[in-house]
Image (cartoon, rainbow, N blue to C red):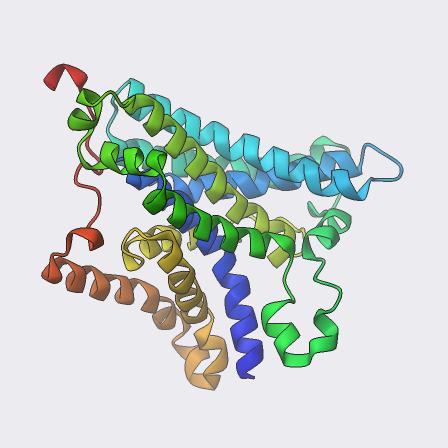
Length: 324
């Protein structure tokens, strides 16, 4: 039961890890993107729409294209929303909180509408589903079944699960060990000083926000194509986008710590399934646990006041070069 619980917790953790990694990269530039939940919805919806249109446009779908087309569609859909957020908050200097919430509302509404009506638009019937493409996303390593519990725990996931871990580790290395990562952190801490040093603040903010949005969108794609088996259900993504933002605080803005945070939150999210009648009666209370843990971590890190555990100093604030 422990192995089953941990493997299911990993399945829950992967979309959270994609979302939190993308948001950490965004926030390191000083942008607070509360549109991540909507962007994750859009990434999943665009991916399944691309897969559905392709599967129903050819007689014999290519395995490579069954993977590539949803990936590209997800990248385009989530990147487009992230670009809109960037333009509004960086170029037009709109309020980041209001813009992020508007992006979330738009992303969820757009996805629920087209996810629920695409089948009818293409003269089909039933639920939007892409079982063929989903099978390639869910395909596990060939030797997983031969390793028993070890294989189930470590090797029984689709390729996007390992991509999420690689991106998180690579992001941590990039932020701490590269010149570009240092400049990105400088933009988030003090954009005026970074600008005076010759760093293109707008470029770094645009790139970080758009790349972060694309990474978050892959979390939505994983949830639809792998976790749910290629079926779209309106509202099925739940509050995972907000959990991803909460993990950013839990991980103290470190992508590698976000791996542990995502696993913890993924386990807490499904813990009520394993507590018998008690869990079924107070399931919603169990779902509060990740947020309670986040509040506790936020209080502890605020009391310790260690610089490396604090958010970027200019987080959520617009930058006006004229005020430099």
